[in-house]
Image (cartoon, rainbow, N blue to C red; front, side, top):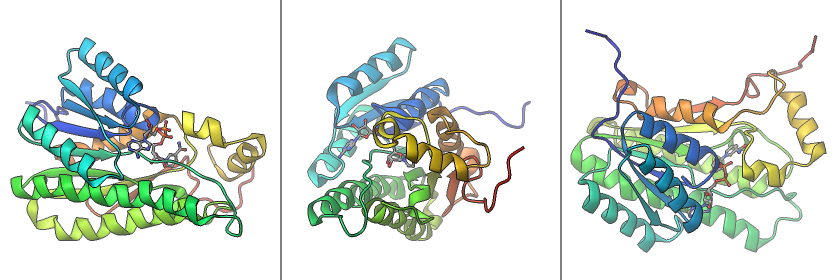
Length: 259
Ligand SMILES: NC(=O)c1ccc[n+]([C@@H]2O[C@H](COP(=O)([O-])OP(=O)(O)OC[C@H]3O[C@@H](n4cnc5c(N)ncnc54)[C@H](O)[C@@H]3O)[C@@H](O)[C@H]2O)c1
């Protein structure tokens, strides 16, 4: 008998932001492990496309169009999940938006938009999914923080605050649900090559990032997804309240000499 069997057969995972980037890569890996998948995203076309891809691989999957910043949408998502699959064991909450704007130039409108989607959206999703999990006595929640929520980078006033807030909230929920079989963790990716980053990182930004990354490259969505999937496994049962860097050594680094 093998000691370590990785399967999620019979588990249902909600993946917000599952239409693109890190969420999409994570949904595909969860499906490899035979989980049922609920893709929740604002982008209906790409979300449905993901579901078609999953279904073609034999995965039981549905798409629920969701704005994670809208409490009614979030509650409807959890209700649709429970109706279709009966329970929710895993929440991968990865929906989010990026922004780069200096502190002096950050408008109130942009601040509200970033905090509304990245921080309030995370609160709504984690509270609503957490409620179903606590009731059941089992759950794995993986939230999406960022290196920008841990280290200071120029232009990240609103985004960094939203992602730092996600890590703080994750820690509190991990404490409150520790006795209910629900683990709550967060990922803190560094620079990951996705559509969001392609839009945001010009040549100067890329150079600045690479100077601080010991591995001297951006990460892939699959490298983040693999960390997320581990935290979703029943075997990760003694890990909670952790913000896990997935960053090529960026967080650990000081002066880097190449060569
Ligand atoms: N790419 C990076 O370098 C990086 C680094 C650190 C953290 N992150 C975080 O990882 C997460 C995923 O990023 P990505 O790079 O894969 O981005 P992405 O743009 O490829 O995917 C984000 C997805 O979220 C969806 N979304 C946006 N707002 C939404 C809303 N209000 N409701 C529902 N869905 C919504 C989008 O439609 C999209 O499908 C984000 O939270 C981002 O902040 C990314």
